[in-house]
Image 1: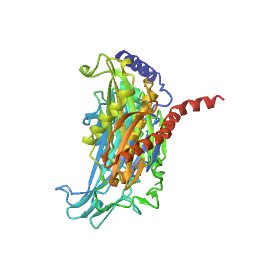
Image 2 (image 1 turned 180 degrees about the vertical axis):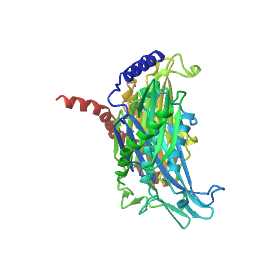
Image 3 (image 1 turned 90 degrees about the vertical axis):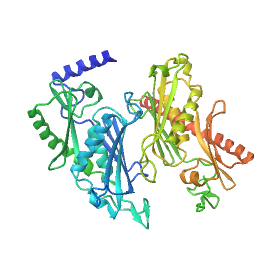
Image 4 (image 1 turned 180 degrees about the horizontal axis):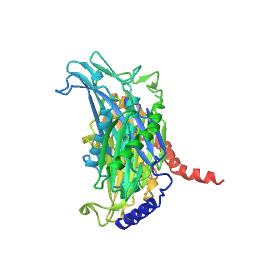
Length: 260
Length: 246
C-alpha cells in the first residue's frame, strides 16, 4: 500500500505542478446533489452526494432540560460518525478524533451563523427542545467538511417542528417548520506541494500537506479550521477567503432551491 | 410484545392496518453496489425500512491473533442511526440489542460463506439502519446477502430473512413496527433457499405447534418473492450494460 501511495502522491503532485487536475479546474467543485426528506421518521434529513462522497444528516427534536447556565435556551447537539461502511480505513468503536473535529467544525459554522435561534426552543421553565443533528458518512471520497455542512444545513432547513401538547410530543400530522435563519456553507482547500485545490477528493486528501476550511454566510466568515502539519502563508489565506465568498454563492443557491 | 392494555386494533375487516393481507409482504426494493469504496454493497427499502449494507474483505485479519489459519473470520456490525425511528433521538453506538443481532447475523453468513477459501483473513459485514419500521434484522440480513454476492465472495447460497408472527388467532408475515410492538408472537427467520435449512430462528410470544408450522410455511412462501428480488437486484447492473449494447 505504501508504495502505491507514493506513486499516486508523486503523480498527483506532478500533474498539479503542471497546472492539471484530473477532470476539473483547481477551484472547481465536483458535482453536488442534495436530496431532503429522505428519512421521513426523522424530523429533518438530507443526503448529499459530492462526487463519490456520500453523507446523510438526520435531525431529531426531543424534550429536554436546559443547560444550567442557559435556562432560557434549547440545545443544539451536532455529532458525526465515520461509519465503517464508508471506507476500509474507518474502524468501529468510539468516535475518532477526526470524527469529533468534523462535527465540531460543522457545529461552529452553524452556531456562529445563528442558523438555529436556541431561545426559540424554550418551552417553559425547566423544559426546552434539544435539536440533535447526526451526520452519517456513508462513503468517503474526500472533503467531508463541506459535504457535512451542506447536509446538516439542508436537513435543518427542512426540519418540521414537533408540537408539545398535554405533556405529549406530537411528531406527525400538520406541523410547522423549525425556525431557522440564513444559510452557512463551507469551502475546504487542500495544499499539495505548492498547489492549492478546492474540494479535495480522497486521493488528493491522501497526499495533501495541509487543509483549510472556511465557513461563511453572505456577510461574515463564520468558522475556520486549518488541519494537518503543513502551513499556509497569510497571503494564501486571504486569497482563499476571497475565493470562499465567491464560491459560496452557488452553494447557498443550491440550498435555497431545496423543496420541502 | 403484546401485554399492553391500550393495545390498538391491529386487524380491521380482515385486513392489517396498512391494508395488507395476512400473508402479504411489504414492498421490497434492493439496489446493489451503491457504495463505491466497499467491496460489495446494497441499499434496501422494505416498507418504510431503509438499510445500507456493505462488505469489506477478505482482508488480513487484524489484530493478527483474531485470524484463523483454516478459514476466514466473519465479523458483523448491525447498527441503527439515532434518527431512524419516529420516536425520540436514539443513543448512538451499538446497544445490547444491536450486539445480539450482529451476532446472530454473523452466524447466518458463517453458514453460507465459503470461508475455507480464505484462511487468515477477515470479512467485515456492516449493516446500517437509517430508517426503521419493524423487521430490520431480517431486512438487514436480506440486504447483506446481496452485498456479499456483489463483492464476489463465494457463497453456498443466497440467504433471505423475514419475520412471521401472530395477531390474535391470525398468523401473519412481515410484521411492521406497530404490529411488532403489540403482536402475540414474533419470529424472525433466515433460510437458505437452496436447501431450505434454517440459518436464523428467534421467537418470542405464544404460538401453538400448528401456528408454528403455519408460520414457517408462510416464511418459505414469502421467501420465494424475497429471493427473486435479491436475484433481480444482482442482475440489474449487468442488464443495464447489456441493454446499452443491444
